[in-house]
View 1 (cartoon, rainbow, N blue to C red):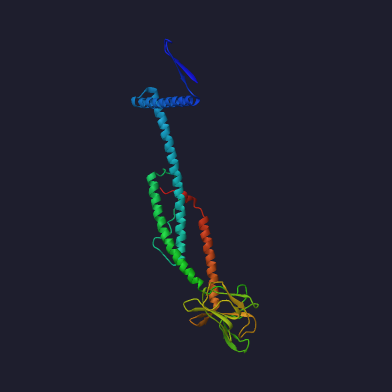
View 2: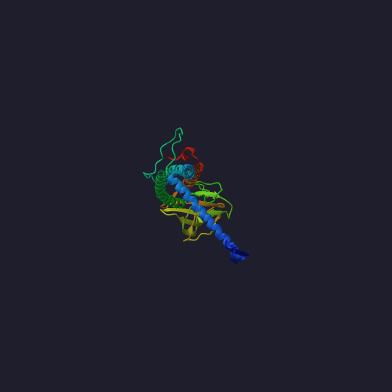
Length: 330
């Protein structure tokens, strides 16, 4: 592109040759200069009008500034209200957590003084002013402090419940042959071989040969031998002088010295030893003295039912909604 520049009297002329890129660059530079000039002029005029109080322009400036501040205030207030609603939901959950913690602590045998049911609250809802930012931060700090206390408390509860669960797993509360009806119970009976009165020291589970026999609780196998009366027998020590005995087995899969868990297969029903037919003879001994195994098995059923009720209660707490608690404290 060629541009010819002449003076006012047409006495001299000068030609400028511009390429396409040079022309584009010149136009961009000119546009930037014009834009910066316009922005500077705009701010200078409006600032000067605001300072000196020009009749029309100063009013426009005040309206624009007021509208901008109002929009910012609305956005801030909307955010604060949203945070306050969320805080109300967190407080409602904390109330539910306190109630659940009190019940769980009772199951664990702990009654901490700082864990009490919150006092009842309610009444007609009368909306008040919105929370300020400082009040919101203060409430969040209180909630964070209470949450930290609850975390420490539930850590202790978890440890205690785990300890109790381990102990319960060492108590023979599971039937060694599930789904099989009992034959002879614990106590005095007519001996099937002599026809005379004799003490039966366990429970008999009549089942076909080869039916799996399960450990009634976790423990250490302290005996696995063939006894002339018990036949092939396994003894499991569960600690604190508590031993379970499984007699008349066809096979013994657990060996002496093995650690077994509750419900683990340790052998199969047989007809070995002093027996009139295929069955399992199950004994529970405390300090070497035979006890009625049904007391332990019935205790296991009661614990299972209590655990199911506790699970349903926890599910109800998690699923429950307290609409009134969604309103943040003022």
